[in-house]
Length: 172
Image (cartoon, rainbow, N blue to C red; front, side):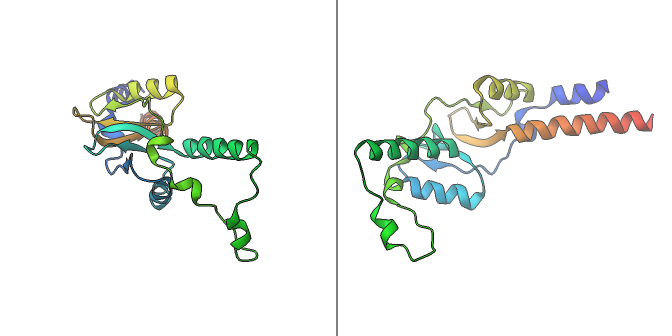
């Protein structure tokens, strides 16, 4: 049991992070960002500036907050249903794309929690818990994303350690 716990405590972010990280540009529009997230089946990604440095994070929650703000503004102004609804084929869903023309930088989260690759895995879990976030961009020394660690990555490492300890207990 102790060797599994020691191994778990010895893991670094680099050991469990995803290296193929999707990044979004701060000058992309929201439609492009939504398409990129959907294509990769992820719910959030770091946002980079023109130099490739991480300047924010865009998540599904940011989309929800953005659209809620737009809906609230439209309701206050007494806006009628979007013209797109009238032009949609019968029985087909429609989406008013106008709100998605705005730039990512206008809706992303700016105060992003990040972590270096050589940080202990326990520190990543601590930061995610403290900030109530499910993912941390892993940055190099220049502030560029080199990976992503998620709460699921941490849970998988914990599960593997528990299963390893159980295997050792059953074998011994």
